[in-house]
Amino acid sequence: MAEHLAEKGHTFRRLLRENLRLVLAAAAACIFIWLLEEVGEGELTKLDSGAYLLFVQTLRQPWLTPYMESISELAQPVVLLVMLLAVEAFAPGRRPGTCAAVNLVCAVALNVLLKQFVQRPRPDGFRLIAETGYSFPSGHSMVAMAFYGLLAWMVWHYERDRLVRWLCVIGFGLVIVLIGISRIYLGVHYASDVLAGFCVSLIWLALYTKLVVPLLMDEKVTEHE
Image (cartoon, rainbow, N blue to C red; front, side, top):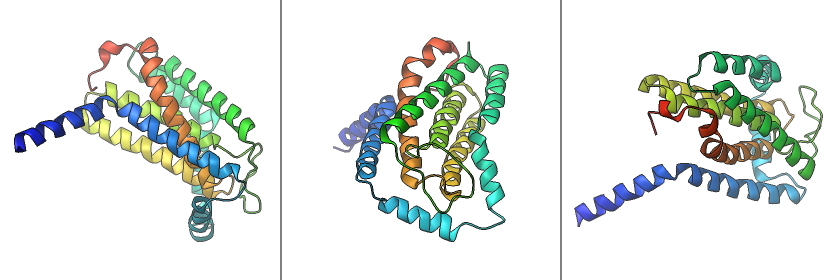
């Protein structure tokens, strides 16, 4: 009996590992649809109200604001261009720079389409920086998850040193989360905008790494599936 249960547990873990992309994409899609319905009602969600209380009313301090502005700029075009050049120069694979650039361009285009579709106004009355355009989903959050998420995927699949893989993936993950938090802190996005941006890019990455990355990267280098 115990051996049978252990075998079933092993099978479940194997199936989960083999279909992790599908599981993450499905979960992200469910969350995004829920957020889209909430935003469509035209009222702030409990998530937005709670995040405003935490990140704006409680966490906002004069000394912290410059750091949040700097973190937010990690998703700005100049920084991303420098990162793309570094990826092209140092990352393994056949066309790593092209792979990262195509991913970034597509994520930005998808964000523009979604913003035009939803047309949610930005928060008003407590912004610390000037921003234009619609609010949902957050462009910085989508770009952060798509771009730095792909870099994390590359490191996990191509880096041979286990410690380096974990440190880089955790580091990129922190960058993604902090960029999202910075947009709420600076008052230019609601929390639901940020979470929606993360979800859309997770869905996009699941498709991109499955369908497009094999065409642009040398899969023979992959060692850590």
